[in-house]
Structures are given as structure tokens and as C-alpha cells.
Image 1 (cartoon, rainbow over the protein chains, first blue to last red):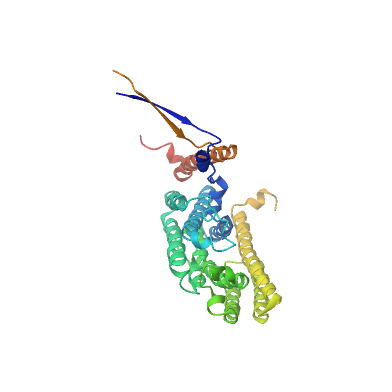
Image 2: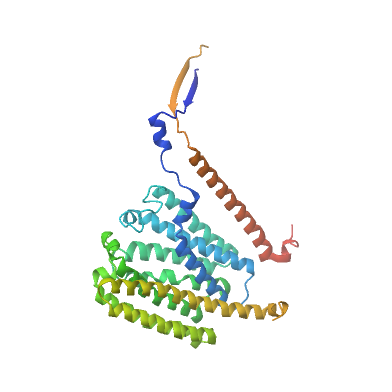
Length: 326
Length: 58
């Protein structure tokens, strides 16, 4: 029998020791960045609107859990997307500094993190809210990862049209958390975002086209040309403006929403026409940037108004307005 | 029994202060997430079962 005395010497001046030590270490904020917080914010907001618009009662704590699970589910989809696309991300200046291409997080770590969040969020939503909503969340993550990221995105310029559905599902999931079903109202919320997505993204593509070309992603301006993209933006904007009126026409939004949808719809169409008219130079870039910015404002305001109107209804139904003297 | 002593000299990693802080932040984040999950499931049990929590058959 022999005893082995192992001396572990950490030497500051030793190059071999410092080689490992110098390796970049992932901080909490890097893991948070993997969740694509900007996308997550939009998902949380639209899911909240779906949840508030839905008829029926949900306990406030269950509502909180629902939104939390949807947010984590969206985060897992973002994380898995970053894992799958880290080589493409390294080619585009907009995404080269993300945690994986910059080397702060290893691809395997991101994959494990994403799967853990996906399984956790779906299971928690099923156990604490309902299994229909949980199944819907799982389907949305699958749709985003497999149908959009892996299948459509590298193959067709219509990627954002079909794949955009994954971004339009959250209000339906929020709605399903309350009702456990899909109804015409939740389909209308889906339709507004679904029709809005192509015009929004193609406006962005018009002024950051080179990035996508470098990564060989077939976006509409690169494949079909800019004039065709401008025509498509115009068509989708008209459809979105009409869809934006549907909540009022179907009776689940009030007069305030109807007026705003009309005015904002005209504004959206005006900016789409500007994009259509200016097809070269700085004016074209400016028109595309304005269109992109207004599209965000359009969706935010419409959903905020829906949220406000239905929150008011909830306050009335609970007699809370009496309590605060209104 | 004769004892033979073998001395190994291994190079280990020396963490910088910043790396130690990162590890600490990660540990704190994991602890907070676990505590949050435990709290959520605790409250959710009461929300879902209500008064039945107290009157269950043992």
C-alpha cells in the first residue's frame, strides 16, 4: 500500500494555470441574455392581454404563474434558437456579441439550459394552471424551434409569414390559461399579430438586408427584390389594419379601442405607402425605419387599449371601483 | 509496511476576483430560483386546494 501526497499548487505566474483561469466565465446576465428578454417582454405583454380579455375567473396568483410560465417558455425557445443558430449569429454584426458566438457560454450549456427551462415551464403550467395551455405552450416552442428556426428560416423567404405564427400564439395561450380552450376571440388576437409580423419584419429587413445576406438567410428583400417586398408590406399592412378592427366588430372591445384602431390603422397604412413610394437612397431607409418604429407602436397601443378596457371591466365586476370611490 | 510517498505537482486554476464574484452571483441566482419555486408551489397548493388543504384525510 502506498500513500500519495498530492500537492496542488496554484501559481499565479504559471502560464498553464492562467490559461484555464483566463477562460471567459458566464455571468448571470449572460444566461438571462440567452432568453432574449426583448422578445420575452413582447410575449409577456401579449399573453397578459389574452389572459385579461378571456371571459371567466382566474385567481390572481394562478394568473401570475401563467404569465411566468409563458415567459420562461418563451425564454427557453429563445435560448434554444440561440443554441441552434450560434454559427449564423457569429456572422452578423447585430448578433455576433451574443453569449454563445462571443464564447461566454458553450453551446452545450445553452442547450441544457434551454431544455431545462422548456420542460420546467410546460410542466409547471400543466400542474398549476391547466394541461391544455401547457400543451399549447409546448407546441409553440416546438413550432418556433422546429418549424420556423430549423425548417422554414433557412429555406424560404416566406419564413417570417408562416413562422410568425409562433410569435402570435402567446395571447392564445394566455386566453387558454383562463378558459382551457380556443375561441374566435383568441383567434382574432392571433390574427392581428400574425398579419402584423411580415410588415414589421420586412421593414426591418429593408435596412439591414446585408446582415441576412451574409448569413445566407433567404429574406424577402434579398430573394424577391425590394420592389416586391414593398408591395407585400403594403398588402399585409392593409390586412393588419382590417384585422385590428375585428375585436370591436366582434364586440369584445369598446368604442375607445375602435376609434384608436381606426386612426392607428390609417397611420400604419400611411407609413406603408411611404415605404412603397420611396424606393432608393436615404429617403427609402428613413421610410423603412419609420415603418418599423410605427409598427411596434401600432401593436403596443392596440393591445394596451384592449388591456385597459378589460382591466376596467374586471374592476367593475369585483366592485373595486366602489371601494376606491369611483 | 513500507510507505512510499509520491509527490504530484498539479497546476490548478487561480480564479480572479471577478471570476469569484461571478461564481458567487450564479450561486445566489440558483438559490433564489430554488427558493422562488418552493414558495410558488407552496402558495399554489393553498390557492388550488383552498380550505381542503386542512380537511384532507390523513
